[in-house]
Length: 209
Image 1 (cartoon, helix red, strand yellow):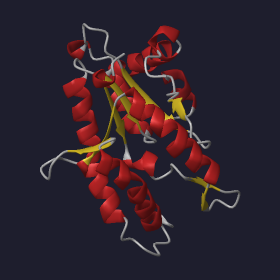
Image 2 (tube, rainbow, N blue to C red; image 1 turned 90 degrees about the vertical axis):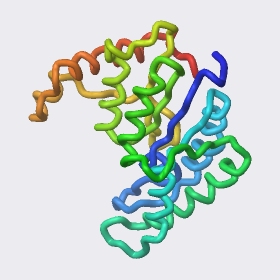
Image 3 (tube, rainbow, N blue to C red; image 1 turned 30 degrees about the vertical axis):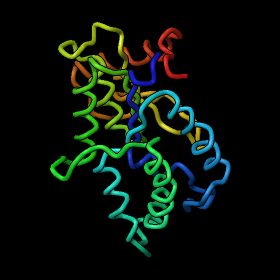
């Protein structure tokens, strides 16, 4: 699969946990192993797989939040944003990560959903996010009958684990949601969830690893 056939989008929330985990006391702590796993192993793999993109809205969000200090509700948020920006900037400068968008773009999640719809029939798409709601919406796009590519392009959604590795999202089935007292999703999204498991379990669809 050609690198030019693949776009990889990384969400702000993933970048903000790329080097940190909650420790046994529930505090956010830097994790050197996770840092090395994501930034030195997974990120180069993603760069090799396709064009790596951070939307301008996501980057601006990092910049704005980097000024926050001593917020008890969001501990270390400013420091983490500043750390991530320092990691991103050399890649932005040498072109291995692209900042895409303009000042008129809507909020970040809407941009990612818009990109999924726009490029669904033109590129392989890989979205990396820790946001379950966004992951469900992106997965739903992959099953839209009206935006289905005829050339085999695929849309995948991943998250990073505590170990800094990329992992498929395992979205709850409607039966699990009912047992947990969660509201049922629309019929389209219910079908999407079960279809997503089938796609993830199909070995021939592992196109980027």
